[in-house]
Amino acid sequence: MFEIFKEHKGFGKQIFLLAKDELIKTYKGAVIGPLWAFVKPAFTIFVYWFAFSAGIKQLKSLNINLGGPEPFTIDFFTFMFVGIIPWFFIQDSITQGAKTLRVNRQFITKVKFPVSTILTYTAISRLFVHILLVVVMYVYVCFAVGPSWYNLQFFLYCPLMFIFFVALSWSTAPMSAFSKDFESLIVSIMSGIFWLSGIMYDSYNFEEPLKTVMLFNPINFFVNGYRNCFLYNRPFFEYKTELVIFLAEFIAVFFLGIYNYNRLRKKLPDVL
Image (cartoon, rainbow, N blue to C red; front, side, top):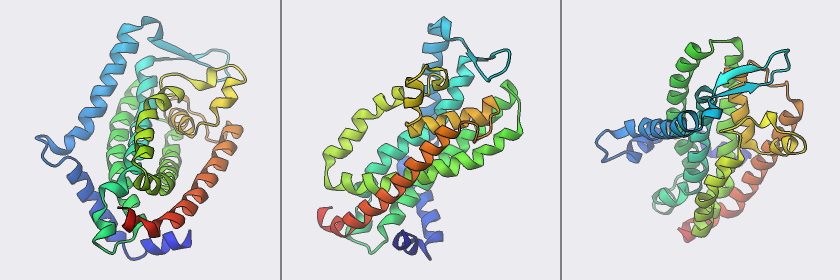
């Protein structure tokens, strides 16, 4: 852990400049450039709106049980919109994070550059896009539901999400560099992960034991977290079991990432 922090020391300016260059490089050659970062999510949101709001009429609104005498009713588009915004960041963090070292091999094979910072600056470039999407989403939520003090919990969930998936990339990126099959496996299971996470449905409404099983999905934690602070007005500690399970997973992913990174990083130049 200290070795990773030591590698970041003195590279703060370079990390942010490289994050900016990473964003430019991603959309280099495209006519509308970085606007593609919004076109893709916008198109995906439209598809899901059409399929579930216009196509499947019974999902036009959901009754969310908040523990009061009357259920809280919300239209499906708003419910889906808030849940899918963190998914865009999570999806890119898992798929792009896994192949980051292979894509940026020149920093490892030709330039003496701290490997862990590559994972950090590419994650920050994705975070820039995520924050802009959250701003758009929040403007919509303010009109649809209204602002709340609970919205401030975003500043807890977002950093936690960022750190969690950077730590996950400490394991997946070196492993993908050693095996392209591992990278292909990650890409192939992402569609399944999407439907196994509570993005298009409310996992809190499941019956036991499935409701408890869903608590072990860390993606579910962040999707529910965004809805708790933007839609449901719930404090982050209301679901104590979910919070404890996530913190245990967070610690496991963090230290497993450190172990895998330190075990594999010295072999990366030869492999790449």
